Length: 81
Ligand SMILES: [Zn+2]
Image (cartoon, rainbow, N blue to C red; front, side, top):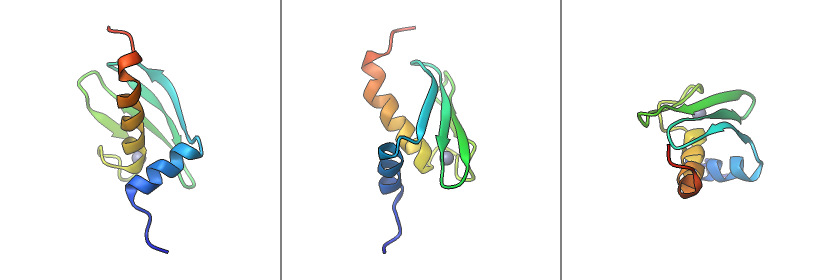
């Protein structure tokens, strides 16, 4: 089987409901994602910096890819701060 791309993994995590948001506002986002074997914490600070505690979490891991997709999708519904 071909190696799973980050995009494919992002969809898989979404379908398996592995992401849990604890804070979801325009400025600040935080929550946990159940990875393959371990849980990781992600966050977005008000300056727009994303971070994930997984080993690839410098803004480009599959967890953040998915979280950012969700964030962008719900952004219009989030109250102005
Ligand atoms: Zn990650």
